[in-house]
Structure formats: C-alpha cells, structure tokens
Image 1 (cartoon, rainbow over the protein chains, first blue to last red):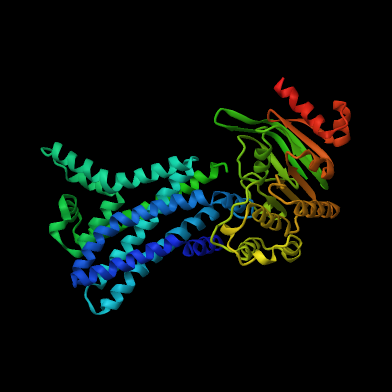
Image 2: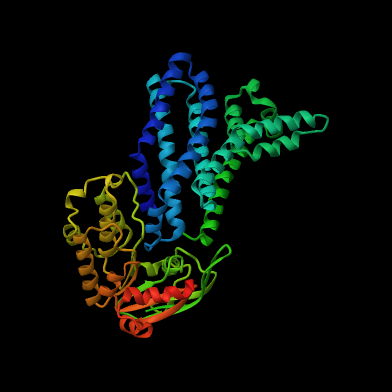
Length: 260
Length: 235
C-alpha cells in the first residue's frame, strides 16, 4: 500500500493543480494577514473559506483522480497486490497531497508573520487539523461515489451535488425546519442534524475553540449548552473521525464485489 | 494449468459468460477468439481477478484464484488500453511496477529492442499511442512468469515493433510458457497460435488446433473459417 501511496503522491505533487491549490492558499494567507493585521481575525476569515473550499477541492480531486487513473488502476489490479491496498494507497495519496498544499500554503505566511510568538497558534493549528479532516472526509466520499458510478459525467455530477448539499442546501433545509417547527423543542433534533454534516461539525468545532458566541449560531449554542466547550470539542472531533472511517469502510466493502 | 469451471457472469441483464468450462494445459500459445461482445475480455479479467464471476470457479496451478492475489506474481498481463499516470516518466513507471513485484526482470533488453531508450525520461502523458503500447509491452514481458496474458497486443504498433513482438512471443513459448492472446487480426493468429479457443454466447464453441478448425469448417483460409463460425450466430 505504501508503494502505491508513494507513486500517487508523486504523480499528484507534480500536477499543475496541486501548485495552483498551494499558491492559492499562500496568496490567501498573505493577503488576509496584511489586510487584517490581526491573526485572530484572519483565522476566522480563513475558517469561513476553508470549511467551504476544502470539501469542494477534495471532492473534485477525488473523482477526477479516480476516473483519470482508471486504466492504470486496471494495470495495477493485474499485479500481485491486494485490491483494497491499491485503492487505500490512492486515497491516502490524494488526501495527503491536498493536506500538504493546505498546511504549507497557509503555514508559510503565518510562520513568517510571527505565528509562533502569537497566542493564536492553537487556534490556527486546529484550523489546519479541521481542514485536513475535511480533505480526508470528502476525498473518501467522492471515491465512494466514483466507485459506485461507472459513468464519468454522472459521477462528477453526483459528487458536486453532494458537496452543494452539504455545504449549502443542508443549512437551508435545517433553518427552514427550525422556523417551521419552532413551537417544538428542537435541541435534540438540531444536535443530531449537526452530526450528519461534517461541514457544520467542523464549523462548530472551530467556533467552540475560538469561543465566539456571536458566530456560534443556534446549533453551536445548543452544542455548547449540551456538551460544554471541552466535551463538545471532543465529541465533534470523534464524529469527524467517524466521518472518515465509515466511508473508508464502505469503500472496502464495495471493492470486494466490484468488476473492473 | 488453468481451469475454468462452470463460469457464469452477468452484467445487469446481459449474460456474458454462461456456464463456461475450459481447460488450458501448460505450454503453447492459445488464441481466444470470438465476435465482439462474446466475453473474451471478461473471461481474461475473471482469470486476473478484476471481474468477479457470479458462479463457478477458476483454478490456476490447481489452486482457486477467487479473492486471492498472490497467484498473480506468476502471471503477466498486457491490458488493451495503455493509459498511464501522465506525470510519471517511463523510467519511473518501470521502476514502480518492478517495485510492486519482488522478481527478476530484464527490462533493459526490451527497452533496447523497442528503441525506447530516448523516451525513458519523457513523461507518459507526452507519448504517442504506439509508444505507450511499446511501454505496455515492456511492462508485460519484463518478468519471468509461467503465464502471459495479452489483450489485443497488436494495437497501434508499427510493422517493426510487430515483428519484434512476434519474436518475443515465440521466444517465451520456446521457454515452455503458456500464452493467452485475444485479437481480431486473423493473420496474427494464423502465424503465432497453436490452438484456438472460440467463444460464442458465453460458452466455448470450438477448441482445437488451427488445422482442426479448417477441416471442420471445410475452409483453407483461417479468416474465412472463423467468419464461418461467426456467421452461424448472425443467421
């Protein structure tokens, strides 16, 4: 598996898009620091960008890589390697290279700015951890979609729809249901609803750490009331881990019956 | 050496393999023929473990291959479409495949034979179709395995490369290897194959030597003899 990982990683690291992605974060980091002149505020702005953008990029890279390397995967399947090792290697290769672009792209400007002397270092690290989680989650989800969809165009469509649903539509439906059912106790419902969306979960996790009540929103407030700040962070981190593990398990399950 | 037993495979409603039985002995060149969509590639992919049959079993050197992978170390495969990661160079790809198989390899000889030396540092994305196919052939023949499976090996090759390919196939046969080939080019089959396996409707319709086929169909020309077999399906 490590060998496959190594080559997927090399291949991706040399693709133009990895550099574009890296340079985008680099630019973003510099611009935010110089416009805001305040690491704390920059972290909040970054959070808003990261929780939408990393899932999108992870989704697109995931489906694109799967369909583009299809014939090559067939060549690998004829080698004496276990099926699931091939796909786990590819999956980790994509996720790690995307995470590297994120960490280096944002890390360099922040280190240059003097992050190590600032108290924001923990907030910033958490931001990167959440970004990494979102990469791993959405690459896994998009790989699941690609494995289940033979048609490239359809696969791409479903993957983008999934992102749109989790990043935008989900919140809309959630808000509408809160308004419609506002005469009922909704605490439990909103708690559960948050768990089913990794993007919401990430947002709450970061805001709990930043301790900004104004931005927490209804779900965040319920979350904090119910679990408290520290336990809430632990729970949301745990659920994010589940969000990685479950799609990966399904991938392996799907692989056992898949024809190439 | 290879034994397919009562193999069934369906894709949705389409029945591709329908209770196929086939035994292939060690040594020699076997051409797997059949009209388009007769299940040639599916049969090969079942053997390679890429397609999982609905029913039946496959034995390679007396052991079942279903859900296993170790057996593939004694098997080389040339896929139909040569498509490689565009950002790796030819040399890196060869190294990678070598890395995946703990086995002796003789890629230098093949690289020289096919004149690939000047391409070794080029990225795979920049190669022409024929050159990619040559790389493909190097990857398939560089290991010393008892079974070699070639899916449409002549695709996109220039005449010189084709002559080299035939020589290599002959050389491997002389070493006592078993070689399975699928192709639509009958002159190629006539030249290299010892035995023909003809697939029709997901079953073995004919298995035997080229001479036996010619005799059975009353036809001296292999192309016409095969056409004769296929025509029965269209009738």
